[in-house]
Structures are given as C-alpha cells and as structure tokens.
Image (cartoon, rainbow, N blue to C red):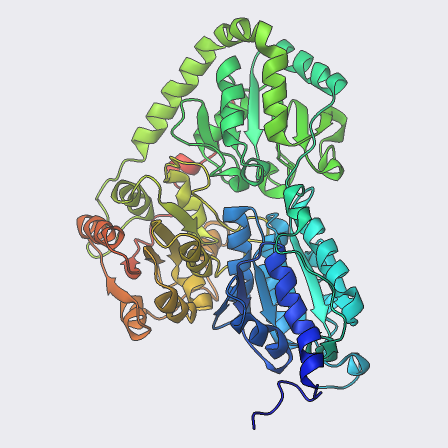
Length: 578
C-alpha cells in the first residue's frame, strides 16, 4: 500500500473535495500566467514542487544555486513583461535568492519570489535553518508577506501579483509556512483558469490635458531639446512611440545605461547611452541640450555621475509619481504617465507645429550625425593586439557582425556591459543587463531563461571570467535546457573593471583582482556544453556564426588584451564642453 502524500490521512471522498495548500499555490500561479518556477528544492518546498508534477501548465527548472534561480525569474520578467517564479527552502536557501531579487527590484522586473518556511508555530524559534524571510526580503521587493493560513492564500497571491505588475513593476515575495502548504484545505476556493486581473494590470495611465499643454509649450520653446530615455522605455515597450515623437520634431535621443535596448541604436536620431562612463558622442548630445525630456528615466546616480552632471530644464515623464523631481527638483516639470501613451498624445498635440520645429533643428541634427559617423569609425576593429589575445572593443564589434539581427545580447556586470556600448541594437527587446544592482553572475542564468522563452532565438551572453566564476555551475543547467546560446567569455583572469580602476587611481597598485588562468572551454565540455579557447578574431567570428546556425549551446573562451582599459578607451571618454 502506498503511503499518503502527507501525514494527514483522508478518506476517498475527502480527497476528492480537498486540496493541499501547495496545490493551491500552483493553481494560483497558473491562473496568474506563471509558466516557469526556477529554484532548488528542499524539505520545506516539496508540497509545492510535487504539485507542479501534476500540472501540465507549469514547469519546474532546477538550478545549481538559488541566486541563479532568482536571476532567471528576473530575466524572464524583463523579456516578457510577465512574472515567472523562483522558489527556495528556508534559511540559506532564502538568503541565496537575495542578490538576484535585488537585481529584479532595482531594474523593475516583475517576479514571484516564493520562500518556504518552517511550521508556523516554530517560526522565530530555534528550528532548523530558521530565518525571518519577510524582513530579509522586504527592502528589495515591492511586497513581502508571510502566508500562514490557507484561507489567506488566494488573496495574498492576488495582491502580490497586482503589486508586481502595476505602476513600476517589480518582484514580490510570499513566505509560506510548511504546515499551511502541506496541510489539506477542506473547502478550497475556486480558482479561475485565467485570472481576470491579467486583463487590466498592464493598463497604464495617460497624461491629462493641462499637463500635455504645459509639455507642448516647453518643447516648442526649446531650441535643442533632447530625449533622455530610461528603463521605462523597455518596461512600457514604448520604443517605437519614442522614435515617432523624435522623428516628427527632429529631437535626438540618448538613453541611460538601463535604457539600452528600448530603441534601435542604428536609428539616425539615436546617439547612444549616457551613464557614469557613457561615450563622448552621447555626452556631447546631452551637453548641448537646452531641455531634457526624461522619459521613464529616474535620473539616478549611474546616469548623472552621482548627480554632479549639470542639466538644463527637465520635463520628466514617469509612471511612478515618487520618482518625479526626486533629483533636480527645482528645474523639473513632472508628468505622471506611461511614456508610450505620453509620446502618442504629445505627438498629436504638437502636430500643427511639428514641421516648423523639425526644420529648425536640421543643421544641429546634421552636425550630430556627422559626429556619430566619426565616432563609429574610430571604433573599427584594429587587429593590432599582441599575439594570442584580443581587444574587447574588437571582439564586440566583430560579434555584432557574426550574429543574426534578432540576437539577444546579455552582457554581465562590469566590463562586458561597458564594452556593449559598441553593440548595435537593431531590434527592441534584444538587450538586457544588470544595472541598478550591478549583480555579477547575471548573464548565464539570464541566457537560460531566454532559451526557455524561445529556444530558436540566438542568444549571446557576454561574460567576464569573474562573473562566470560566480555562476559556473549553471553551465550544467544550460546543457539540460539547451537552445541557441553562445557564451563568450571575456577572459582577462581578473576582476578586470576593478583592476583597471585600481591601475588608474592607485598608481598601478592592485590587490584582490587577479586569478590563475582557467581554460573555460575545457570546463564547459566537462559540464556538457561544447567549449573551446579562441584567440583569433576571424576564428571567433566563424565559430559564433556556426553556433547560431546550430541548435545547441556553446562556450568560447577569449583571452583578452589587458592593456585595453575601459576607463581610458578614447571612445568612452566623456565629451568636454568647449
């Protein structure tokens, strides 16, 4: 005779009418559109993970580390606009999630963060792995709650979902007691196949008429307005609306570091990213502005060099009213609205004056476009690196040529992200990276999530050897999941970005940044992924093309020329006002 699933034995009639709390959790996830749960199982999680086995609408993807599971949920939210879930057991399982959760929170990605605690009566006692998950995760989530009673489960998950999806999206946390998810709910609530909240949570507010009139006046009176597009462009999928607005009035567009990917960088009015480093082209555009139209741009420290950047008058449009005027308050005029709807509405309001405004900026735009042509030419691959190593700038330019136009680029934190300024974004939603939290170990788990979303889409993960060391175990997860994923390791046997900063600011003295040389191609093969070391640019291009022509992941370890410093690379030196 098979033992009952849990200790409580029920008669056949009771089993028919009842469900466990864990089964209700899974049904609610499916009702709210969650297709994947990422995580590491433990004793406390089993009532939920076991219930996934019986539900064909949701899949559990087990990872080597909970931190990777949280990053996968983050990447899924960025790429789809809808939440996935990550799950952990109590104590160290929950604390392992935190870094990935912080990345989702700081970069506004919706996700369900599920932790499974001890029995309710033993929480805050000296039980195994005891920890206060709610307090641990509260600062890095939009919503954090203990669910100890099955009668509260449905409402708690609904409230969490609405918090995750409305306003500025982000991760939400639910902590389930073990006795609640393992216990039987005698009269479970009816859970709809498709929850009605899914129909309206993505609706976004529009600006009112007085606000639009005020904005129109500011834009028409400016000689050199510049659109500074932030992460809101990605979250609203508003890139096309932004470009239509820019085209109608001949307004140049720059992005924040977090706004890369919202618009095509190949568009003639897009001039790159402005951040702590930025480029001399993008900073020139911003320096010449007499009005900054900040769309979905919080004007945070990374964008503004910790608020030392001098800015003219600012028209700030944001879905989150608490971000408007938080910085530069005395020169900011704010509008609470979704940036996509704002661009549509302001374009209509300005239509009668658009042609006159557009022609008045023609000479300025022509000058900027000439500067862009010269800047781009200055970054052409030089092929003059020492024997056996390659320049990261040459690698990124060559990889763009080797990759299909719809390739999703995922640079990791540090130098890979900085060098990705040289990557041409040719389609919206084809670039994601960790910015607000800057969490290393992002690219590999994110590539796995992308492969699950669309196994046929080419995905290029640009990873430093330092970040790969923090997520190395997930190569085995990638081997299980598969997909057209190419991992390119920018290998300088170092925490390269920090080493370069030490060399620049501490008289060449370095500490804590260098490693022994690792053959990551050999490591990858040992974990089930094709891998090799390549130090020739033409051979690298050929190999990446071959990976994307196939249907299996591969890793290419590329030794770097350590003399090329992102902090002093000429194209990244900020423009100086004459």
